Image (tube, rainbow, N blue to C red; front, side, top):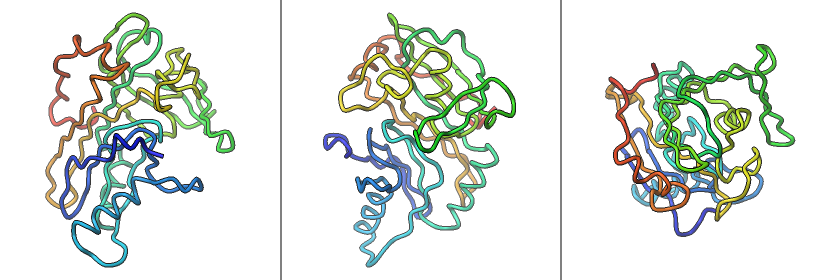
Length: 243
């Protein structure tokens, strides 16, 4: 279940879309565990706010791993869902993450691997050989270091399952708290230090660029290790869309 002290927070909403800060350890969509999902929570929130009877439409257009937190974009109409899905498929959505890792990730720059998901084990395997998985690319835009940890600003260019976690683990820099991918120990609440920090997309009807951000919990470990270094995160260049 999601931590009761950290519930979803609405960042932006209108008749077409809903942008939410997802809690650590909350599912985005329902699964066979029966635990509460962001999808069900959003349906209930819209239903109460609009005073509608029966079900309301919520479209899942992208996902965020259960132990991760931060921004998730939801569609409130089928037309918006279709247009958002096209943007994600065509790589026209800017997806920016803040991640704390163990070890030294090296200099900023792109990382390209080939990923294959083992559904039975719920784990993504990594290869450097083309054809042995789906081509997966992320770009480390900036690095801050503190002791044996590093804070990364990552722009995700593709959107594979567990992509950031698997790629960083392959480079011997597992996400803090991510026992599945080689972290040295857990974080309280069994979440991981992976946070969806900023999203940039074209509004489905107004055709303007929306740039929405949500800060990680800077007063909590391991984020507080970097608070004095990161007084203000750098802006996304130009219109913030993928470069």
